[in-house]
Image 1: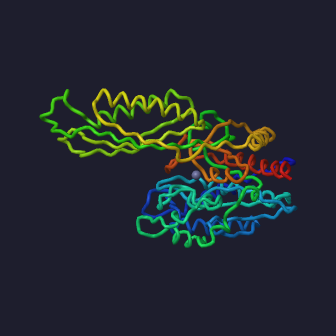
Image 2 (image 1 turned 45 degrees about the horizontal axis):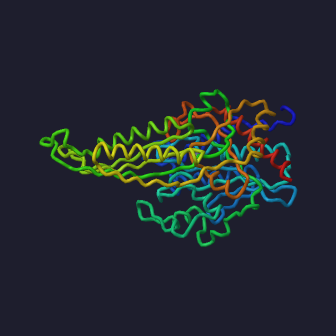
Image 3 (image 1 turned 180 degrees about the vertical axis):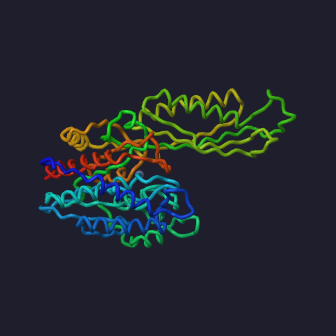
Length: 415
Ligand SMILES: [Zn+2]
């Protein structure tokens, strides 16, 4: 063992991550573990045993967050570290799980090396980070940030089960949600290790990403109304084709976002009316989103896109209505925490790159109540939310070591 290094046990990390991939839903594509499914509940029970094995005191809070606590030497608010265990349908083995296992491994290494932190350490598993069958994501971290409302609890899944009932099945107590809420000052700092789910780190050939923030998300709805006419008898020059106009709108969004720096934009949903072979499309609805870290930049791109929609409207003699609004604000992690992650990587001799997250995470909500940051790990070929999702074991061990060193640095810095 090198003096002063935590040296996470790569074989143990590998065994733990593979163990979770056994808790998947039969009859669904691998590796599906939807939130509050029987398999998710089994995975939650299993993680409690792992935490107990790491000599953490385990409880489930009223919001369904599983919390494994290691006491500190001083009466201080806890340092918190964790991620999630649920997956999207057909998701992979690393999204969420890597962060949970890394956090537990850090706690195990402190225990094995008799390292006492001044702060208590809380390893957290947030329930339902992914868009759940109830149409809501990041449910546990929402509850912790005081943003899970009664109207959320009344949401139902496809079977009519309420979120309230699902949360109770996972050991939560929705009647006592205020007890799960952490206010600013209640948590000393929060770190989440997660796979990148994009190509940047793999392309850069580095094992660790220091995450500077999380994109904001803006969503929009475009309604295009033309005129449904007979496809055989209506000459090309007399048509008011909503689909042809909508196709121009899709390409316009692509062009706007391709030329606007760090912005991405996508039309991901299409509805066409009447959607018949022999009728010129009379109406089209498009669902779109834009993501970026800089609000002014996204707003400028949205204005450019609106101008282009106006030109499509005029040239094609159709009606276009465009509703666009922010659905989540960009998060910028505090420079002090980001630089501390950088210093941890440098001191361990682990190459890193700096990047922002294009996906939302539980850290979005935690950043509202505590100094927060994230560590990313390379995703092979940038792939995620699919069964091919892969991150090298050595990279997970490297990220875990940066995580563990950063927790110790935070412990010293914040005492
Ligand atoms: Zn995730």
